[in-house]
Amino acid sequence: MSEHVVPPAPSTSDSTMRARRDGIGLGLIGVYGVSFGAVAVSGGFEVWQACVLSLVGFTGGSQFAYVGVVAAGGSAPAALASAVLLGTRNTLYGVRLSTLLPTSPLRRAVAAHLVIDETTAMALRHEHADDDGQAARAGFWATGVVLFITWNVTTLLGAVGTSALGEPDRFGLDAAAPAAFLALIWPRLRGRLGAATALLAVAIALGTALVAPAGVPVLAAAAVALLGLHPRLDVTGITAAPAAERAA
Amino acid sequence: MSAVWLIATSVALYIQKAIGVAVPASVLDRGWIRRVLALLPVALLAALTATQTFVQTAGSNAGLVIDARVAGVAAAAVALALRAPFLVVVVVAALTAAGVRALA
Image (cartoon, one colour):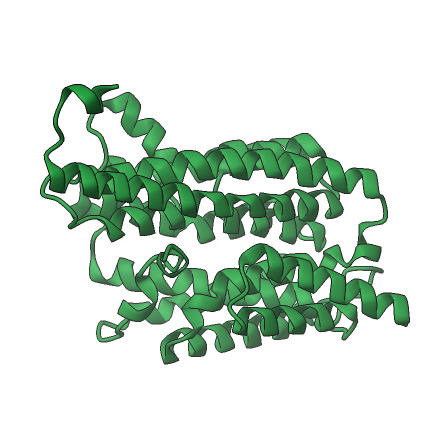
């Protein structure tokens, strides 16, 4: 073990250890993959399809969006559009984390896959713990790796378990999907702008649902985000990766 | 066919992340992009919550209904207000909806 050979520079390695420990703790919340596996299968997807979304897609909100839109009768292109629009925040997270992530192309490509709400929150939380970003990277990798494993293992368990149940609506799994969306949006509703944006989106979505096929209402409601074109809108309250609060 | 869309979606979700870490920050770090993309998840998640709670999925005629799902989501909101973790929130919603359905 290198710890015995190299006497650690106290501040750096302490902050790195702390970030790693925090990251492992946060990564364990990936067990909610079980609810994704359950929701996907009860929405008519095969077990392997749920697993592909978790392994390759690996961003909870977008995965729920894809299976939710298809399960509600929406078209596959509408489901793709919803998932990808919801995933745009990962692109911005990547921009924000760019200087903290490793420089080797291969490691960077792997790191990119782990750029999601939780890993971003953890990296930014430890960004100023040292001078060279080592703690932030440690927190990022610990969160990402643990979350990736728990998320994928529990997706499989949830999917297999649900396909064994049969008749999932009897177990209330059709209420699990909207509850998952509500849980994802909850931390962003605190400020006035977040709440107003959500209310407007709900009104547009339900209004559109009366006249348009499934899948369209969600995309129509996305137009509310264009309010952000207004140059004086202050979005600081809702830009921070909300998982930061759960990381405490 | 549906499998192709599912795989395309999964790959697109990775490409999105890769773009973020690959392009120079100056390309995407603009005020209006940051503001629109901050609001986008809020609008989408709110719309998804509402449609999955109230839009009728069974049968051919679209429309809004109030059924056991509403009770489930209301219970989820209570759980969230009590700071319950994600998995608890989802289980509470499912059990509540199942309970209401069993009683009906």
